Image 1 (tube, rainbow, N blue to C red):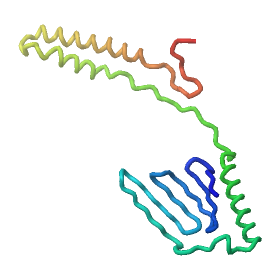
Image 2 (image 1 turned 180 degrees about the horizontal axis):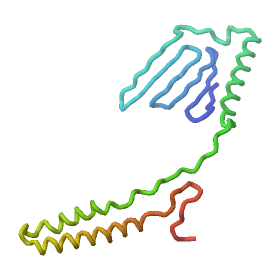
Image 3 (image 1 turned 90 degrees about the vertical axis):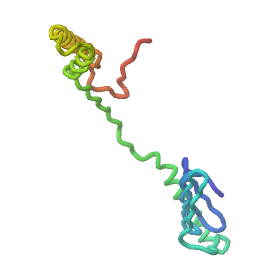
Image 4 (image 1 turned 120 degrees about the vertical axis):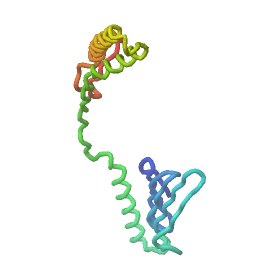
Length: 168
């Protein structure tokens, strides 16, 4: 007799005893009557290991009626414990806080733009270079303001208070 207790957890009882198996086809641990069995599969290679008791194990067939009843009661107790596990209290979820991004680095924007503008101006063309630097400064101010304005004003975005984008 075998039944699935939860995803990835199976309990089986046979004449040889009770076994519990946890995992999936890629990684599994099985323990109980017959010892502990572990296996892992990656690609086409499977690694397996038996440890603990080996050879023939005592079976339920050789037990008295009282011992069999005790084994069944223990199995029922284990099943109840596993099936009611989801009734355990779970702490309430807390909203998560998303910090605002750092303001735009105006100086970095200015240096990048200035480098682009000065690349094609001769070093000795001082008037043109000065005009390019002034243009880069104005561009950096406007670009930093645009980037800062596009940032959200809300310091907390929680799963229950997400902003809606249009629609109803």
